Image (cartoon, rainbow, N blue to C red; front, side):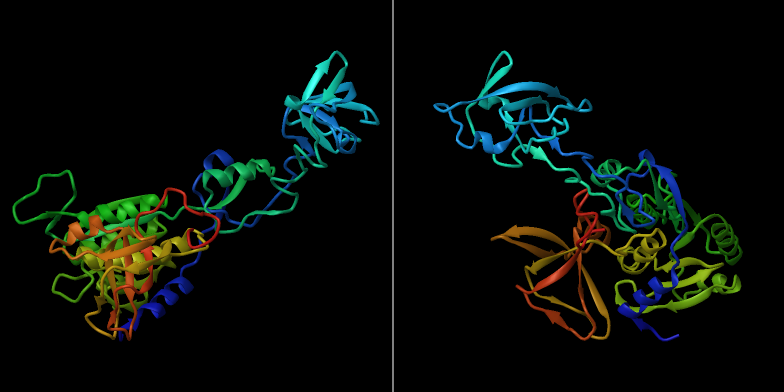
Length: 415
């Protein structure tokens, strides 16, 4: 199969990954889960016009000209507290003592703060005016009945959980979390924590991929298999039976010991592509095995990570119900010119961010160590197909590899 372009590969991936089913959970279990439906307010919050301050509920026009040298005397006819409304009506020459959160009594259209009153038994002297609506929190001001509070696919961050509670929810429908099998292949790789024989290396790709899945709350299993066809085959059988998606790391090319795609073919996977026009990461493959997405990732660390970030991660996010299947992005200014190796593919470049003269600069990382480059990277930019270079000072979109814990989760470029 001929190599396809990045945009086509991403579109194919998102078209063929089906979102998991939903489940309804207690609100206490929903932090950072993904809403499985549009959530509309069940109630108004607050449910009544309420006082923002301790003070007195009054008719605003009666104290229009009140001041320290022109006090307005009003008779206090009752008290209203939160959850304990006053059934008296504010009429000419009267006021009702009111506490924060209490329902505004009938007849009143303002609350004068207590610091602008002088109490004298059942009479108060008001020494400041209060226009209509002063210190009143209108009914439904936080959330109005039937307002859309959270859209399907929104990540339920703590602030959103709070407003959903105010809107009347105690249980929320959320998408199930994808269970991801991460399988590294190769006789030369060792699980971190075990003794390291001479000539071998620890499976850093395995740890990196697991960390990215963990960032999105996806439960994972991690395994390393030897470069033997029957071992790879049996691991794939087990993985597809017990998981919602599979990531393989290494064995993605056409070498003598690259068995992953061959074993997938034996198992009858539906291959959509294998190798696309991106660098690094061109050896990535994608297909479905028993209807579940399988992402075949190359073994080299930069290729492995970029293939994951650009194709596999969007696919996993689609599987988990996210409405924005990709990394958050922001506009940055290039600190220096960047060049592609080939105009016929999309070139991805790791970099770090700097602040300068009110701009966020993107500075490409140029280190010999592949792992250090990855560990230092704060963002990624792309040189699209057909472009050989992008000049210093250009404004480009950068994907964020590090970002605030809870960026604008309900809209914008963040998910």
